Image (cartoon, rainbow, N blue to C red; front, side):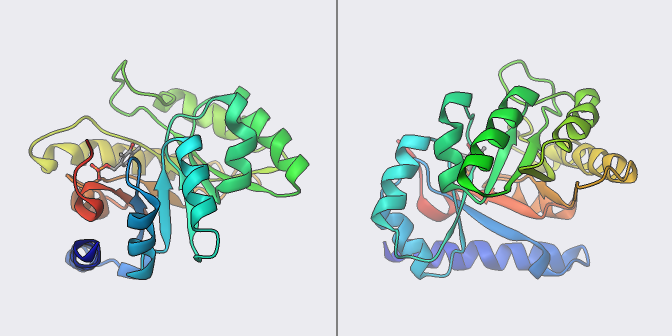
Amino acid sequence: MENIRDNLALVLGRIAAAAQRCGRSPADIRLVAVAKTHPAEAVRAALEAGAAIIGENYIQEARAKFEALIHCPAQWHFIGHLQSNKAKYAVRLFQLIHTVDSLGLGEELDRQAHKAGKVQEILIQVNISRETTKSGVSTAQAMALARDLAQLPNIKVKGLMTMPPYFDDPVRARPYFADLRHLRDDIRALAIPKIDMLELSMGMTGDFEAAIEEGATLVRVGTAIFGGRS
Ligand SMILES: *Cc1c(COP(=O)(O)O)cnc(C)c1O
């Protein structure tokens, strides 16, 4: 687990350097350490080394790790595909759900958040590249979904999330990141009441620096911190 500490320090250094290169404050970019398939002890090592936010893709797996690490201060974010029948658990475990892509899921989260006595913070997942294999609403649908989600009293929309196609050269992902930023700015210009539209969750191990240069506020990095997944 020693290399998790070193890896985390390297990633944080690269985030700070990328921010400085484009005149942003490193404090405006938060790292989500993506721990899917890695054991609770790896997550503990990351938290002890200074990670503040853990990202998980699967509810079952997250629940087990959350229980094991209940005494470790951490924010947990959900970044996987969420089925409505798991919304209850998602609301209990996660501060931020990055992957809301339908009004139906938003309504179920709203119901469960009401029961749990919380306001659930969410991001709208946008399929910027329109790949059929990816979840997320289209750019055109995102505005309407933002308006509809804003009506739900126990949901708070904080921004947008995307996953561009994989490229060997991260420079090629930049136009997709720029598109998400433009969409964020367009939705923000609508000044929909009760919507923040500040966060841009984009960038993974292969392309987080490019994402930062295009305005990412949350980068989701797994492999560079925890190593490869089997
Ligand atoms: C797994 C995953 C990541 C992290 O990917 P790495 O390439 O390992 O950094 C980020 N975002 C989402 C949605 C993921 O599923």
